[in-house]
Image 1 (cartoon, one colour):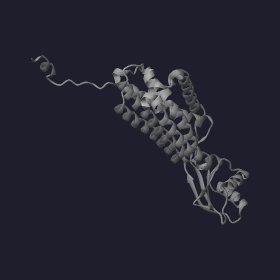
Image 2 (cartoon, one colour; image 1 turned 30 degrees about the vertical axis):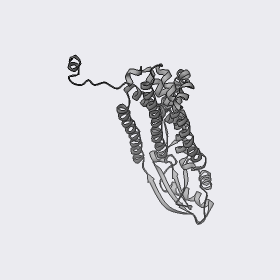
Image 3 (tube, one colour; image 1 turned 90 degrees about the vertical axis):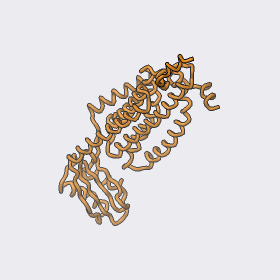
Image 4 (cartoon, helix red, strand yellow; image 1 turned 60 degrees about the vertical axis):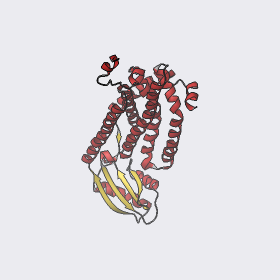
Length: 314
């Protein structure tokens, strides 16, 4: 019943595919240009900096501490509660300086809110550590992409596999490009979100391509474009439900999660949106342009040894 209904009410998703793909090409090129010219706004996890832990006798708001730091000339610091509402962790970027002078500034700003403030811990994250994290983070993304490439190469015909890899690369590049263009802070939480986007986008593409492969075998008539439209239509309800439930959580994190995971939630919001449409307008469209057809989906028939001899026996 569901399959018949889907066939009779097929949505022509690929009708405007050329314009959407053109938009994607512009976004990818713009993202690459932005990353090459403006670079990324690396967080303290990658650049290094000074970490100061402050203890108060009374619960203190991180927002008040941040304002006090800015009043004392320390801008761009990351302030968060650490363990309890009375413990505050301040991360100061290296551009604001380092050493005892910086710690004195932070202490002055902390005691401007309450004279009982005490510096419990001071740590300096060197730029060498930040450089290693940058390299390891990039290698983590590349390793994930390579493992996915091997997986889809075994699971799908090479045209479908190529389309899925192109969609993954598209999602990662556009997400990084937006962070570069708007100079949003890129830290380890955002890197984790990028890796999560890779997995989410791949899962959505695999669901669509599984149905595409099945319909190429089951449907005797129809162009590749029609079969893809039928497959996407049949999986659309699943895509809407999965995306909606995921967005409920991500939007909640974005609005209520606080400053520490704001970048994480932003990357997930962007990645989910881009990854959902790339499964159709990047992955499927690329497979069609590579010449996918019914013959490529049919299983290879292996002839048994001596079958030709048996055929001529009386």
